[in-house]
Image (tube, rainbow, N blue to C red; front, top):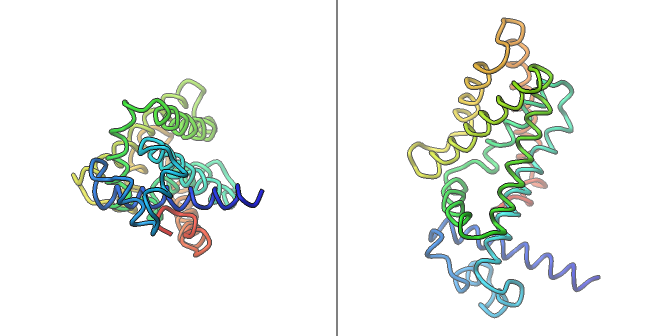
Length: 227
């Protein structure tokens, strides 16, 4: 049991080092040697835990997607209404803990690996499905089933678009602007009468305040890609 625990810790450290290597050198420039250098171990140690670069990339995909899931779960703990739960999903996707220029650039670089790696495809599809399911579940409080699914798909496209533009350096990664862009899209898809708009603004403000404390804490940052 102890050896498996140590192995899991080492694999986590190496997946974090791989992500940092992708940020520094890009996907093509990331080698097992550079991963080992960042992690402070030899290439042999890296190969002991991961048979090749492809296996490392799969671990990075899991780590980054699990971090997003952790953000949503953490904010859900404080969300009390459908409005707040919907905003928990949005804020989690763009909180500065994971949405910054380095992470966005690495994500875009890693995304190019998806068509060539079956396991990475599965991980990414599972992540997209989870986001879609979470959105549909909350959107059903505002729309009928078919409209909720359509709205969730459109919001998912907006999320990917913001990440892609930021990762490609078309524009800077800005958490507040990204969340405001999502608010604009949301108001085009959901009822936007004065009372609904008020509730959305209150929910956004509450969840963003909670995120600054909960996701900005040292304990949570230690789980992040660069913590």
